[in-house]
Length: 238
Image (cartoon, rainbow, N blue to C red; front, side, top):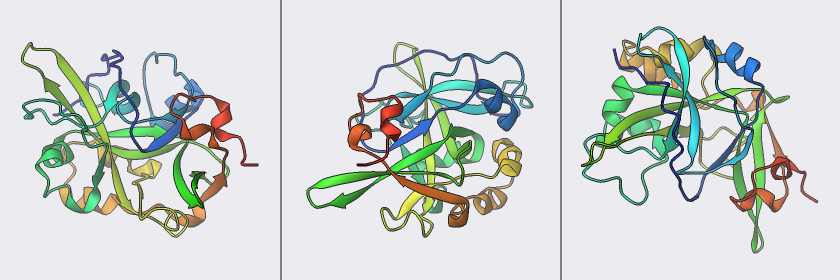
């Protein structure tokens, strides 16, 4: 059984590109929501997670049964790649997962959950871009469908990476962007993580989250700068 080693807690450095989300949650709430067992590392609140940074994911432990947390770099590098490349993909379109060699094997064998409490999209208003924060109605934890892989360099050093699966936007997100993260329901976590789940059943899980179950907040410009990673990123727009 394919499993994700939850002992990888290194912090490779990375620079931001585009695509941001938020993950600010109590450790106990995370454990309860994702069915985690054992001691968990301290979870740093992240208000402005950016590509190539280290992100928290949930995956199966080596026993193939229990779930644990791991830190992976956001930007998938398949194990067969000759080199990492400057811009590894941070997203994978649900509709073409089986067509793209970069994602095909991970979709079949190496899936994870990416915990979040919201994500950002931008609306062009004149010459500026106004950020919007999308979250579950009333707030709370959500889980993006994710893929992972481990790339080994010529020197044997290993790099664990991941990406987020995207689906067509629902009617709440669509005015700002035609895609959104695939948000999985809690009852679908087991099927997504189970390496024996048939591909057709996995594909059925990848659908837009109902718009009526989400809300959008217009926030200030602090999130536009990746160096800002505090509560100011969620401050309402003036």
